[in-house]
Length: 555
Length: 49
Ligand SMILES: [Cu+2]
Image (tube, rainbow over all chains, first blue to last red; front, side, top):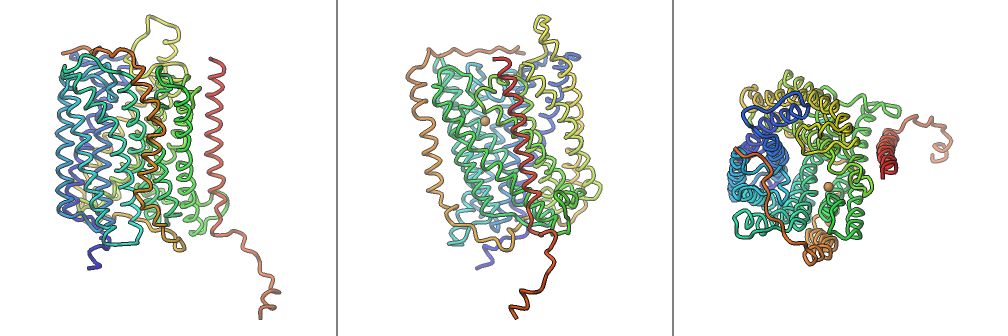
């Protein structure tokens, strides 16, 4: 009886299969989406043009949708599904079936959206802002991806709920708790994007209505768009808080601190979307101000995380006899890809987080808004911190799931891959940041802007981005080699799924953290507080709606 | 017994294993980095607007 709920050291092979299915889609998206990224940087260097009538904005849409939406959602769902399986003792048949149904719905939706993009019916970029108008099948495909992810996430929630029922009065396993926080945040956040797609964009693209209220749709999009970035980030935090300590041979600094920071992310990730709309007319500045303050609340759990990670590393280093202020830094296991690859991701989060605070500050947003600085920013957050952590997770999780071993050679290649990524991103993201400060726009193909002097200043930075993009593409080839090796060719064996424990003297996490009524209640209250009045105002004082535009070249 | 213990002059351990001063220095570094970049861009804002 008791055995039933004891965490298994290995992920159940039936659960492993579903996780791997997610990863095949994720890494296919990485391959294709990464190639598109390379093409964009080459076009923007001004030295090269796309052949065969392929359009820059089509390529840009493929890149954003595949990497920002498909790679992330599939990887995260696959990882969290495995983490819940590992720490709760496995999913039930019913939960597993649900997971598969979610997976297939997400995949069908992805294929629907991808087809429309390839047919040049949906070059609306991954943010699909109205009044750019795509084919209705594109929006329906996105709806399938979102609904599929809900069903996929429901499997994790079901298994968590079963564990809680079987272990009354016990705090749930940390990784499962974190996975469920992220899934719950995702479900609450995607309600916004589901609302704009179902009630605005689908009827409009089907021709049932002629016009769309642009501000309403953008507000609903950003209600979803900010927590989207935390949906990407929290799985990386799961690795940093609860897995990395085990890999280095240390302990989690504080289990309760980790849980509290995840709860704060749940509370403060959602009612803050206006910080993406600071320059938009039609929203009362007082409410923008309020949401900026709520945005800055997210600094608290972020710095809690930084503190906790440093403390884990220092405690471990000192237990190994390291002395001095930074002696602990040197004794960390730098030859272990499972540590070093995510560590580079963590380090990248320092400039990434600093940039985020700048973006969210009302005045500074006027300096950087709609410039390629923003693109540089999320290539540090998502495309370095998060993605390198996901790679680092893959290097033990894929062999764990396929019953293989990460060999010494692959471990070495993985570390080289991460450094290649770091160098490529330093060039590309660094140049994007500086070009942005000089006013270089984002989301735009190469142009000399009629020979404008200011635009000429941007071109050297765009060449630097092409250099960085090429190095990054080499990094993508390397990671794909490792992925294929670990999935199909690596020697058979057992690779550990590391799950860290809290320090010996750590107290049991307070049960209040598992009080979902309380946390969902506060989440809902904060959202209603931050959005109700401005949203009513936006609707009541709406300008006439806009007809649709298709600004891109069709086939 | 207790008295004897009090008298022994134990050399204090030079470095406590549970010391977190490196962590403190690190988070101060992160904080300083945030402030410097923030002020840098704020300066640009003042220059331009
Ligand atoms: Cu945001």
